[in-house]
Length: 176
Image (cartoon, rainbow, N blue to C red):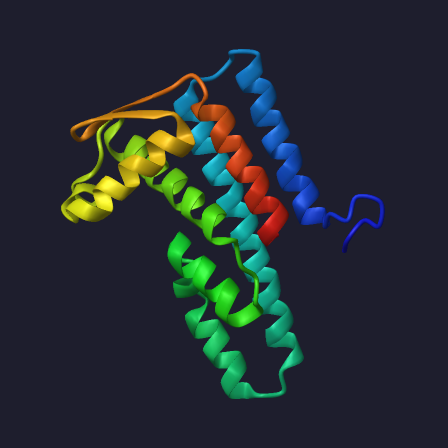
């Protein structure tokens, strides 16, 4: 349901509230930049997964086709297995998309979260395996998220958290 005054859905309002709480924690210097990156990513992942679940459930309830209901049930976990699959199914199945630039920034944010979660301050072997893709990721992280990259190591800048939150707000506005 969309609020006529804000033109935001309840899901968008909830996600924006969570992002505001994250921003307050950042402003009060209560948390690290790494925590901000992880928290924004988790907030977006939860909201996107919930959106996909709701859309799938609605479609499953609307269809009279036992085949379509079975296909949705059987593919549901695969549809939510990764950011790539979530975004792909939201686009293909429900015409929910991000602009190219926001999609690129979200991808960089998720890759940064993955590196932090798996290796702390270095990129994973999967991230560095394809050299051209790795260079593009580094360029995006440096230009959009205030991340300093040296070889396969990185350091978050003082504005990384704010940039992550801004990307989160753009995703909420465009996708949810």
